[in-house]
Image 1 (cartoon, one colour):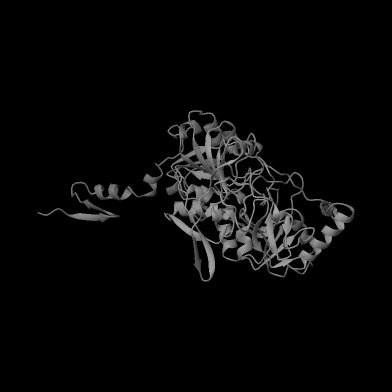
Image 2 (cartoon, one colour):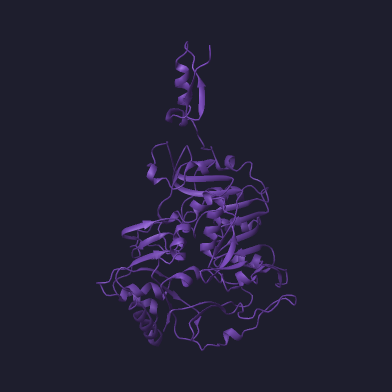
Length: 482
C-alpha cells in the first residue's frame, strides 16, 4: 500500500492514520503561535556585539544627534579590542558623542561620510594622516547603502558630475606633514538622454547599528519622525544588523502597516539605554524677532532685499527645499494666499515653524539639525526616499545660501588652507534636477573672481585640474541669481 502525503506549505507531509494530529503539527510550524517563539532580543549591548570583529565595515544610522544608535556605539567604545573599523555614516558625530567617541579612541581607520564639519577631533586626525576619509554626496551615500542592501553592485547618478569627486581629485588621506597621500579614484561617466551621470559602487556592510523607536521580538522596527534618516537603508544592508530600540514590544503590537524595517533584515535587538540629545535648540520667536537674523544697519537692508526677492519665486502648490540661514526667512515674506510645502532632505515633507520652548522634540529636526515642528498634513520618510524625490525632479524650488555666485550663475564652495575640503557635491542633487534654483548671497561676483584664481595645492605627481580648485569648486549654474 502506497504512503499518502499531504502538502503543507512547501512541505510534503506523510499522513499517519494512527496519528491524525501529525498533519496539524506540520502545519503549525508556520503558524503565528510557533513564530512567536522566535526571540531576537539580546540581554545587553555587550552580548549583542560580543562576536564583532576588527577591520569590519560598520554602518551607523543617524543624522546629527537624531536617530543615532548611541548605546551600541558606546559599547564598541568600551570594547577596545575592536579596531580598524571602516565606519559609514552621514556624519562623524560630535566630540564626546556618537561616532566621535570611536574617532577619539582611534578605533576607526576610515570614514565614509557626507558631512564632517562639526567634529574638530576628526578634522585634526584627517589633516594629520591618522584617518582616511571618503567624502560622498549625502543622497549618493543613502543610495549606495540602499543599493548594497538590494543586491545592486553599482548605479549611475547625476550628483558630483564635474566635481573633484568625479575627476578623482578629492584627498582621501594626508601625510603627517599635511600633504596629500592618496586621492579618490576617478568615476566612470556615461551619458543617458543627453545628460551625464557618474557611476557609484554600492556599499556592503558587515555590521549595521540601527536606532528604532519600537522593535518587537521578531526584529520588526518602527522609526519615529526624522529619526528614520539613514537607519532604514543601513538596516537593510549589513550581514549583521543590530537594532537598539527605545521600546521593545511583543509581536503584533506594531501595526503591520507601520513596520518600517521588516524583521527579516534584523539579527539582534537590544534595549536602548542612552538618552536622546539635541544638537541645535532653535525656538519660535515673537512676531518680527526672526528678522534679527538679517543683522543690523546696511547689512540687514541688503539681506532683507535678497530675502524679499527670493520670496517672490514661491508659487501656490510648490514643493520647496530651503537652506539654513537667510533662505529659512523667505516664507515670512510670502503672501498668505500662497501655500508651499517645505521639504527637508533628512526626511520631512511639510516642515512647520520652530517649536516653542519646552515643546522641542529630539526626533524632529531639519537638515540644519535645528529643532522644528510638523505642519498639518506632513509626512516623514528615510533619507534614501528623500533624495529620490530630489534626484527625480519632484522639488520645484530650492533656495540656498552661498559663499559666491559668479555672473554666469556658477555656485562655488570655498575651502580654506589647512581645513578639510567641503563636500563639493553635497547639494548637487538639488541643483541639477530641480525646476528652479535661487542662490541667496550678498552680491554677485564677476565671471572670473579672485577666488577662482586661487592656487591649487597639489602634489608634484598630481595634475592640476583644468576648471576648478579646492578654493572654488563650481557645482552647477543657477537658474536665477540676484
